Length: 235
Image (tube, rainbow, N blue to C red; front, side, top):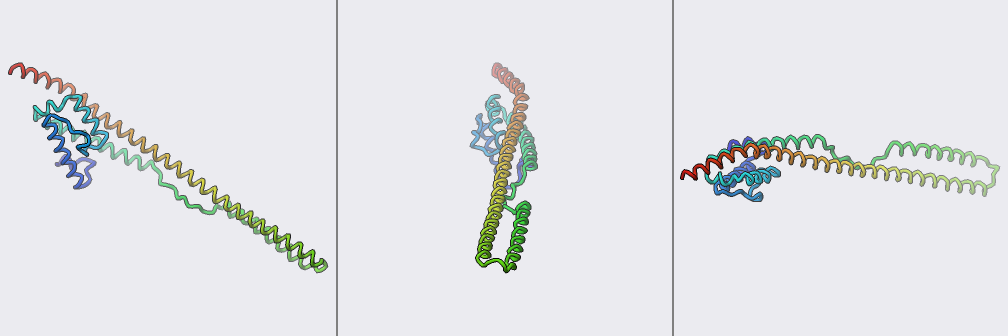
């Protein structure tokens, strides 16, 4: 139980209880000379669990754990040490990924300085046109019909200018929204690439730990096989 509590991935009482149950399942299965199915136990986590089961099957370990209890106890200690190393690398890889990932951008459209600057020339044009209109009204020598025509033309021009400015603002806001969406897609792609890199790193760590265990146990299992054959011959 103490070894389970010291594992980097054991973060609470409920998790500790679940791991203790899974460890018992491992022991009972190996005592009977069989391997637990991956879906029977939640611990260790993937991809370590499946790789470890495959390694035990390749070594024909259940045949020896059923016959020699000391082999089972030694195997359980090795398993806990291996899981400790794997979970430590897993936490380090996850922390590294969180540092690399950027927070999602705030896709809130805001008026840009460029849009504000576009308003100023339009305002100046309106002021100049208004002053010209006042000067035109001061010239009493012009006929009434001429004044009405000029005012109508000026009103039409002013309305067209205002519509053009509003259209420019809408275009600018639309461009900003498109840029925000493109930035969001870029961040999403970056996060997906980071998740894929994390999965590959975890896979590599599990493969390395289990491979070293399998290579180290190969000679031990061969010696056990020879000792068992010699004992059978004597009996």
